Length: 494
Ligand code: ADP
Image (cartoon, rainbow, N blue to C red; front, side, top):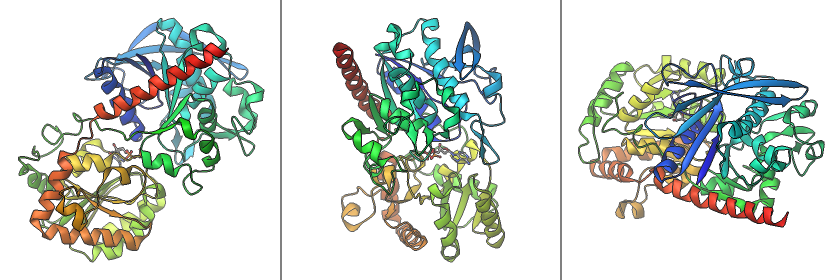
């Protein structure tokens, strides 16, 4: 099958979060199953053209955005260690910026133009490249307009595009791409599509909603999140829209890239290890304590790597920190985000220099070193569409402590007498979104850590889990086949 991925970030070219990981690893897994998968993303300033061997093609796409015409050259490269081709849409005025979506906490005001241009230019590049995908798989609000442009816009009428089936994956429903109605012409959609049952959302343009209404099928990144987003609590105002698409919603847990996250071969860590030969993990713990200037104690060392945002539960973590610091444990945090939490964490690190190390930066090497050096890994998310770090942690033998929500609920098995007996426990799960519940779960982990046999079993069971993309990729292929069949039926009825 020919499958096009449209994503606003792809690892290792440009990344702000889990989307980039998925947008690289899933195409690789699909390609390994024999499919012809290609990716298109914007050519940001952040993409290192030399390092990744980007080459300009001879093709330039011209797209209307409101009253302006914009042109973009198409560049080409291969996703490292794969047979997947990736194209980049160049447009210096839109993508040569300090960051991908925002600076100093403020979204770029022309984001609608940037990503409407990207969606249209990516689709318009296809005939030039002489490649006609059967399925266009769009990711998040930034690529959602492509679904709408194919379903409701002029593109869908052109024979080259009319047979393409669209699939939209929602990685995080909280980011919807909301813009003032005055910018509508930038979408290149007909005026009739600015309506409550299409792209309008309380008087504004909602890119994700446009995608949710127009995509042939919709997926989210875990079955639990799929159910949660149909409720008012997690629906971010779109639960009603999602309810109307219930038969077309599918939840598929992300896999992880087993090469990128492998303690047996990881180039960033102090010593290699595996479930069978776990000794190297203690060396990694010592190396982490050293690099973080923490005393080399035998206490439970907890890692955290996350955006410092309330979505990730940083608020309840900070509320519980005094109680946590009274326990025999150390915590290493790596994250960036809300300046309020930067300040609070820095203050706490000064108060507890022997127990708390705070790294307010984005550092991939350190992320690997934390996974390898930590005994446990904390994710107190308010909501979590899938989450990747709990899976990386299990693979690195860092036992996850998580809230029972979204993908965390689907991937971590709580330690109870029953699961301990069945050797199926992989972590510690708490129910209530509150500092007290978080602290109680950490206390359970601290106490389990004293029981060497139990801790070894938790680590081993986690390290043996199959989080490979192969399993998820096969589930996506079924979605593509369903989407294609539905599109073919629609064409037949035309
Ligand atoms: P998100 O909601 O941010 O996408 P995920 O758990 O799905 O959360 O993915 C986060 C990804 O970003 C993981 O690969 C994680 O290791 C990485 N990450 C997050 N913050 C940092 C950071 N400060 N430094 C390095 N990597 C980070």
